[in-house]
Structure formats: structure tokens, C-alpha cells
Length: 338
Ligand code: ADP
Ligand code: MG
Picture: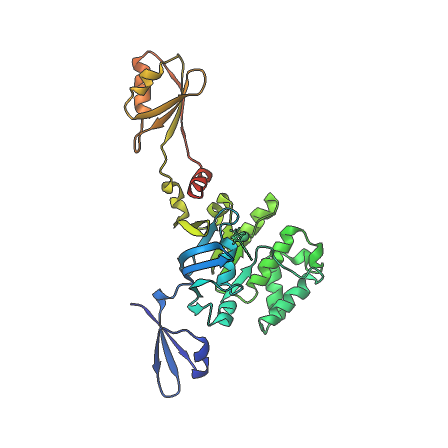
């Protein structure tokens, strides 16, 4: 077991959430079982709006430094989950903690530990960019406001626009301001609700880069309904649908979750009968795709490509083209959230 030793004056005690506590004469020593403190811990969270169950017994553990994509169609419950773990909304049942701080009993500590970019990115449109960031820095009680605001402006590429009113900025630049306010107090955990939604393709790339950079030293949970977003930014994906988690895996394993048959598209030079192709070992199903072209569904774990070439040679025919059709990740997403 790995322990991290920290010393705090007893006055700090109230706001801390230690696993073990040893009292000495004038100091208090906390022993954190560092492996057991998750950056984000969600336990059996349920949210019911009226009669609608928006979240249904959701549990998630996110380790320090992970970049996790919360992927789901509209109405899946992504924003509800984020609002609960950022203390904007109480759950109906269940619990959550950020950096070991409980959302119900230690909400101020939770708020200090997170940077939150809500879905609608609420900003004061009549404030100037710099003025707004000073204001946010003040709320967080940041001492070296001037330096910190300058750092954030540089980090988020707001130099050119920093003297403009927020209302006059493009959506991409408003999103940069939203990210700057989420990062200004250097939180451990970033919660970003659909951070690139509504942006044009160039802005999307820029904001993704910013998130990836910011995420190097932080734990990030971002929501999206776009598959490519997760592939571009996240190391882990959690798919949510109708308030329930339907998949939770490494992004690189997403394709493996798909259990459907492999498809091969083959074009022969001369015509062949359906029956003769069906006899090739490993062929499960086949469909005509036009002149001498067939779509072949392969038995699970099978590979019929060599057999198809052998079949062509044997029948004095030629394979003009052969390609494996990859199942797109979108297809997987549609299946999982049907
Ligand atoms: P997502 O962010 O994945 O699109 P939401 O968390 O916003 O999903 O919504 C989940 C479900 O809960 C939706 O069906 C939505 O209509 C409903 N919902 C969200 N907020 C409220 C609310 N304040 N009152 C009633 N229903 C709500
Ligand atoms: Mg939402």
C-alpha cells in the first residue's frame, strides 16, 4: 500500500477528507491512501426529474490524469451528470466526490478542485475579456491576479481579442474565454460539457488542441455526442444512453466492442453463381452488389480472403478487387445506443 504523508495544522482539518488521521502534540498528520482517492468518483447516481429518470444508478471511477470522453446522444443524461458532480444540481439518489471531497457535504472544496465549462457557456457579454477574467480570478481569491490573467490569455490564445467585449467575440473565442475561466484557479479536474459544439471545423481543431494541452496535467471529463471527438482527445470512453452506462473502455478498444460480422467486398472478372461462392469455407452470407461483385459476410473469427483467391484460380476466374469493409465507430455507437 502506498501512503502519501501530509502535514496540516488542525485548522485545516474541517476542509480535508483524510483516510486516516494521527494526532500529534500540535500537528495533525494525515495518511492518504493515495491509490484509493479517485479524481472523480460517482457512486450509484440517480436523478429523477418529475417522473423522468435522467440518470439511472450510474457509477464511474476516474483516476488522476485520465482524459475521459462521456459520449451519448442528446438527452442521454450527460449534462445532468456534470451538473451533479459540479454541485449545480443535487442527485435524487447516490453520491459523488471529486479529489475525495464529497459533493453533498464539501461542496466548496469540490468547486475549488474543478474547472467547469457548462454546455451553454454562460458569460457576461457586456464585460471585456480581460475584465471578466479579473472578475473570475477575484471570485477564486487568486492573489497574483495580473500574472494569472495574463497567463490564461496566452494559454488560450486570447491576446488579440482581450480588449473586446465578450459579446463581440466569435463562438470559438467565447469558448476560449470559457476555457480560460475554467482553468484560471489551476483546478485538478476539468469538466467540459460539449466544449466544441457549434464551432466551425477550424475552431474545433483549435479548441481540441487547447483541451489536449490543458489535459496534460489534469484529469478531464468531457461530454460529446461526436465519436471523432473522443477518438481525437480521450484515452477512455464512457458511453451513456437513456441515463445508463452502456460501455466503458479504452478508446483504442472501441472497435473491439463491436461484435458484428466482418464484411468483404469482392469483384470477379467473370460471373460466378451465388451457390458456388456460398460453398467457400467461412462464408456466412452473401449479397449481390452489381455486376460480378459480391458482399460477403464472414463467419466470426474467419478470414476467407485466401479461399476466395484460390476459388478464383480454380474456376479460371480473376479477382479484380477485394476489400475488407471496416465497421465504423459510428455504427458501433448507433448499436450501443439503440
Ligand atoms: P444530454 O446532456 O445528454 O443531452 P441532459 O442531461 O441534458 O442530456 O438530459 C437528460 C434528460 O433529462 C433529457 O430527457 C432532458 O429532457 C431531461 N432534463 C434535463 N434537465 C431537465 C430539467 N431541468 N427538468 C426536466 N427534465 C430535464
Ligand atoms: Mg447536454
